[in-house]
Length: 62
Image (cartoon, rainbow, N blue to C red):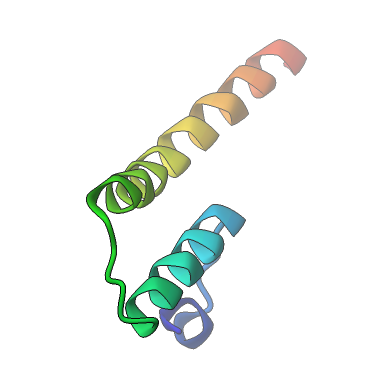
């Protein structure tokens, strides 16, 4: 919802993990700790990894 409102880009990883977490909460089962850890790690690693890959590609092609 925030990405739609602000127009900021989000990755499919963010969309899918948020959907999984929302479904688990809506079903009343809650979010298990392992799933929550995977979601947080995906969110924290997406941008730095993308920046590193883009930099590597830039330097290889430059």
